[in-house]
Length: 101
Image (tube, rainbow, N blue to C red; front, side, top):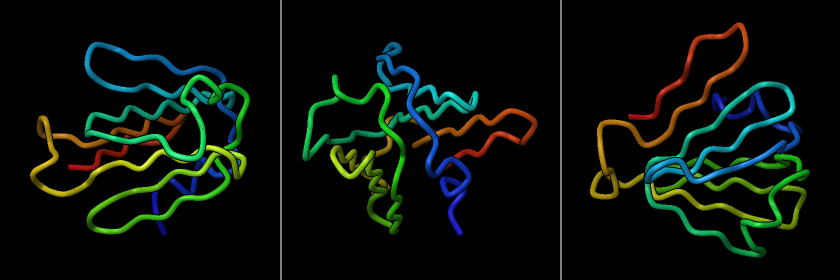
């Protein structure tokens, strides 16, 4: 089970570029920070607000997030893709922070 399963079906409240990473804020108070390179397919990042995280596919080389069956974000998880010590960070209300490193 992926830590990202905890935010499945959560709706995106807002997103923003913070310095050099993508921050996705969900209506349940969770925040997902993506530090590694990513690509958006099957849609445009500007369409992310209001979409629900409907599927997560996780492998050793990438994590794919699907929003409402319409928008995909594919995050490069290969070791050479890391810009720093962390690839992603998930912050949830009343739960420990999860770090992909």
